[in-house]
Length: 114
Image 1 (cartoon, one colour):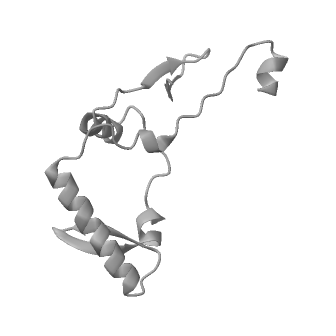
Image 2 (cartoon, one colour; image 1 turned 90 degrees about the vertical axis):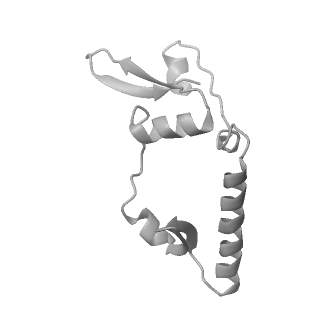
């Protein structure tokens, strides 16, 4: 804010709690059953003494996946104009807030409108 104040431009900062954006549509029966299975298997894994793991579905089986294996090759950023984000928006019924922006040099980038 100090930078913008020095330039004489007003600025406001808004914080949107991401927990409100996780799901904007009610869970259906299939979602409820899947979440139940994930939760039960997470508890079973913890009670068996496993740590640093996540539960997921692989080849139609619930499996324990080490956290370091999950994040080893995962991308650190998501393209807001890419297919993955479009799928998230479509499944959750959220509005797509990503917009393309041209900067002064004509390069196109993306940002999220709040």
